[in-house]
Length: 204
Length: 151
Image (cartoon, rainbow over all chains, first blue to last red):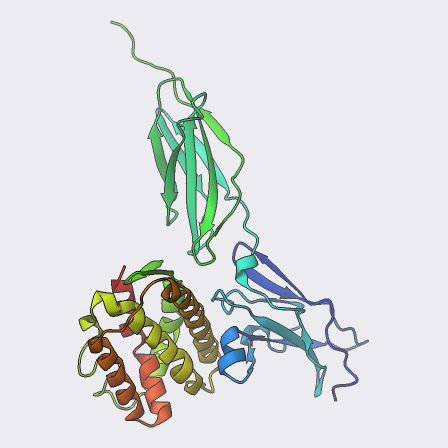
């Protein structure tokens, strides 16, 4: 039953910010719905469990041509990934991703942030990126680039107070993510600057 | 999280390992009929191990789980198998880092901790292999708590 159904081709993995997706080209059989099943094999399975493969139930007999591997690729080791097509009792050979995938190669994008001036208070709002992410925020008074200050945030709360600003002064902020599990950081976000409110005290 | 084992510092994704274990803990512990016995804590708790011995005994314990325990915990439940794979691969990654550190630092096992590890092996071999493996896996939080205590 294997020979008639071709194995899925163009198998690739897209990994961004520690979210990992396997995708492949559809196997086309006129007038029929082809389904797919995905399996993974970590270094442990290769070396200690006779090269066994583990099915991913969410991607078993699926009609989709993409599978979210994030929950299963949860160790920093080399994984192998494979997918096959199924149509009724027919099953294709396994199509295997060329080489290995290790999450250490995930691409890390700069964090999304919003810098706010609330009166004299310099605030920053960071988009949550999941438990694996820490944030390193750099901030400075414009013109004093040599006196950059830093705040490292292990968890994201909605808005973070960075500093109390001098009246009317402009302050700038940029940030990068860090993922301890793979010991890598993203590049910095574009710099954003805001101005503190002017001094409102009146001489009586 | 950076964990300290004597002279060695190892980054381990404890959050991911604990999440994986918590997801299957009830299932695994329900497969352990002998609740009166402990593999890791009998007769003495891991917390008795001296700080200087932590590096060596941690490496022994990671090896114990990788070599002996996980392979005998395969179940009929695909979800459980996936989580065990996740933990096993994380232990493999951690053991490698600890091994690298061990070569640079003396990671010597004192007499007491050698005895402690022998006791753990004796507890393990005192049961049939599947029961012993399931019990050891069911005690993973004891090990994780002890490892994190070293922070």
